[in-house]
Length: 125
Image 1: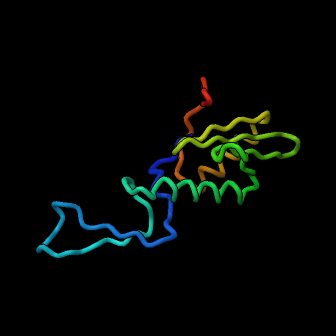
Image 2: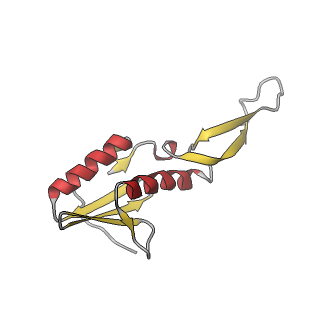
């Protein structure tokens, strides 16, 4: 699955201010923008996105691996489901296809996501 406009989903916990970009300054004023949501290009944007996704997964009873913060797992009716995050992409694996469909539905409902189909290959580094 791929999240659309990934960094626009995140919210900041601190106040973030940004000067006007060159070419947008009007009347030589010194205005700044206050950001309530993350945008592409800010150093804090990936962390804001990850925090939101992490909170959602933990709230839906996934547990996080102690060795890799991007690896989540959950056991439902003796079936294991594994979710791996990589920036704005997600990999799901489970012995129960219905469980994958349910997690896909809940992720799509919370975030604007596109299902990219079955995974052909995967390399863990």
